Length: 291
Image (cartoon, rainbow, N blue to C red; front, side):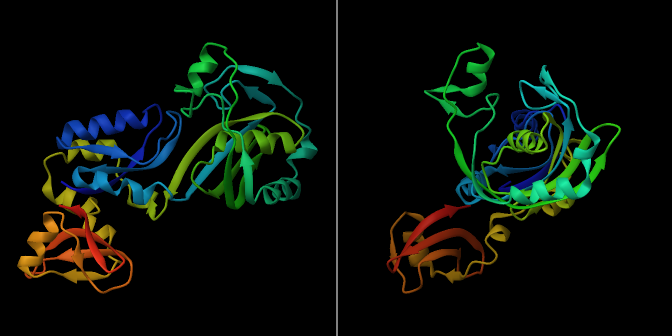
């Protein structure tokens, strides 16, 4: 069982929980390419079997989220799971639609962001949240991110919430973004809800739930239908058919002379069976992934 399974993560599960459950069901290696907070829901691509070798092709993917900000209160974790550490008046004039759209628009583009102290980023071998839990001071490393687009979805004046969609680069912390938006609205706020609807080309409408996975653990048709194979993942890459003697050398790790443009190629045998992928660099074909 090799490839990618797109899971729709539910609330109160960690990404590690999902990996462990699928690993137990499939009895194969399972990994993921980026965590979602326990309170967050949405798209979590899992890499199964030889598919774990695809991780380096997925870490650069951009993402699309739908987030809700609760205005008027600030928490130590910047989300709904933290303790309220500050409260501030929310003037109804601040919830003006045009005003909010204008602020969202100002946040588009490249920028430097400070990640939350309650995050898994490591500093000097320790995760930031470990410093936070012990009330230890630490310099949080800033990172460059990019916001490609932001759209206002709705405003709830009675609940003092704002719902918006954001398309952003890898490494973007939506909790930090929610806090920045609140500050620009001259108040405080935290991320109340978060749903990731797309990671690269993997969207929510193609994701399966944990319940579906458990119900179809032994259903081969389910796995054939839902798994994105390694061959399918590289479907847009050019194809090379290797004769048997060259294929043996290729599988043994021998670099083969191959006149073609540099890049990734799908490798097939003479029976047109998918073998894996190779990379051409300087007219040499090198083995990359073999299934």
